[in-house]
Length: 204
Image (cartoon, rainbow, N blue to C red; front, side, top):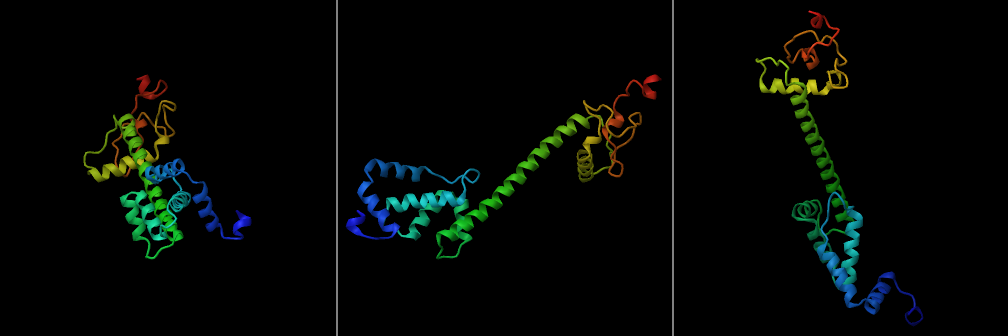
């Protein structure tokens, strides 16, 4: 073919290769691949995914304009992401413009997802901490719900100082003292746990 046609660009050669060797089964496979793919924000990398879909479309439809290629690819991103990408670009846009917008949006979205997951884990851990460690704690009745949340947050933040199964006395000693918990003095729950064998209370 090179002897017959001489020097040409890669784009021209790609068209010739596709027109000469692409068969029905190959086209069917490529069409299915494109139709079935949906961008997964947690799994797919924007640049490689976008360029792959563009290669498939340009191979299947040689006469498809770049604008139509972009539109068909963006439809595979899902409504919200597609809208966000279009809003972040000013027409006319190049492939690079769309990829840059897509990477920026997905990066920010992944950060938000990660923060949400961390908050959910913290909330679950905090709820478990409250049920396991604060079940016998005396929390001042004058505390408002907001003040109580602040108190629990402080207790949870310094939970390593509390009594636990592995450290029954906690890092902070003084467990023979009975004290009312409040925002100013958020003493650990280990202060209200049963006295250990060597404590003054145990010998009474």
